[in-house]
Amino acid sequence: MSPEGKTVTYTGVTAGGWFGEGSLLKSEPRRYDAVALRDTRIAAMPRPIFHWLLSSSIPFNRIILDQLNERLAQMIALVDNDRLREPEARVAQCLASLFNPLLYPGTDSYLQISQEEIGHLSGLSRQRVNHALRVLQEAQLLRIEHIGITIHDLQGLKAW
Image (tube, rainbow, N blue to C red; front, side, top):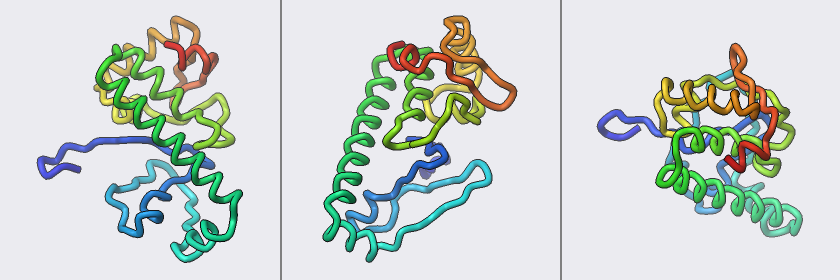
């Protein structure tokens, strides 16, 4: 939250995802809040174990490298969407990003997410998200559910 009280959401993490490796790599406190919006089970890795794995495991290093590369791509897409895209494309890209198999393994076609949460992730009002979701539903890319979204065409969302 900014000193003026404005909140910003940079990313969401779905079940099976993880985050925080940047703070562990830099050996500094996390600079951003992480807020669980639903009942959540969290496993924390102590910094000494993280650094031991970095110094002793090539496969773990590869996982971290892949994670950081995917996060960088996600952040660049976020800036691109924010600066260049129409609201429907911003919502489509926002939803598609939550299905990244490296960052969020095991995510199925249903995503429990509110229109307000999509608004926070895409930088749009809930009303604008509602309109964009209806456009995407009419294009048969997704179905709006009572408490979430079912994705019918992930590649179509990515290409929107």
